[in-house]
Amino acid sequence: MGHIRVTGLGKAYKQYPNRWSRLAEWLIPFSPIRHHPHWVLQDVAFEIAPGEAVGIVGVNGAGKSTLLKMITGTTQPTCGHVQLEGRVAALLELGMGFHADFTGRQNAIMAGQLLGMHVEEIEALMPEIERFAEIGDAIDHPVRTYSSGMQMRLAFSVATARRPDILIVDEALSVGDAYFQHKSFDRIRSFRKAGTTLLIVSHDRSAIQSICDSAILLEKGRMVMHGTPEAVMDYYNALLAEREGQTVRQEALSGGQVSTISGTGEAGILSVRLLDENDRPIDAAEVGQPVVLEVKVEVRQDIERLVLGFMIKDRLGQAMYGINTHRQDKALTDLQAGERVTYRFAFVMGLGKGNYSVALSLSRLDSHLDRNFEWRDYGLVFHVLNNRHEDFVGCSWLGAKTSITRANTSITSERTP
Image (cartoon, rainbow, N blue to C red):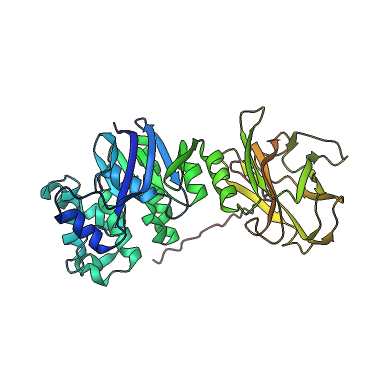
């Protein structure tokens, strides 16, 4: 079984003021140190138990790829230790280790050997590698003729030709087409069920939240958060929208969830309620029941334009439905400090039974990344029950109307004497 333990990990590169300082430090005996260390990763420590899946998120330059390279051993740490138990397969930089002038088949054999497989084993697995990669006759063409998507298909197929104890995946999967991304994540999920330990870097929120048990947020080379995927992704998205004077905070809710609240505070959400058809507050709705989402907002400073949006998410944080007043052509303009606004969104509860939460956004335009007045996760938590309709499967109730037609036909065969 795969086990990963990272302790006090750090990576620094030497920076010299000029080329002569570098040369003098190399050549002059007992020369004073002429460089200063530039830390790209510091004080990173975590442990991943066998069979656990952990996602790593952060902006470009946060140190994600450097961390994976040190874990896989392609880059040596400046300080700290990495302990791995089990057979490791890694998909880091796209096509890393591929030779452009060799064919895909030849590169697959070499890549398999780097993963610790014998040539005979690779040749036995080659039909499966070809089948999964789906690049056809290109397998026998030079890799320099491949697109980035074809390289990724072949690299992933080789890395996952046999189930590893530890699978490490960088953002290489993001270059593939939608079909192969789905196919790849299905294979990753099947490995997870079989006990593979997974470490994955991705900007895809749904991938992190659907696959991973926990997530790690890196910022400026340091680990700033390690928690549930939804809490980490909420905090990460809030940091992406951060502007001068904006605050980001997290609150623990009574149900155990963590609510992330961020924004400049020029406008704020006062209350959120789910109402039934008689305007009574409810915390549970029936499938197909007419409901109203009521949001009360306070304007604290003069605002030229205000947009309210909401998103309903399931218990894993996957988006079920989202809309805002910008897309509905109902944005408000020229608001004055002290105003209070009540929004009412009426709809039929078309979700399947389960637990859901509502995230809310107050912004200037379509996205909270432009003038984020307030972003609030877990603004409301509610339940959906199904006591009125057929017992269906899935996250959406479509109310399918079924008609069936049966016809009897008699077949007469004639014999010719």
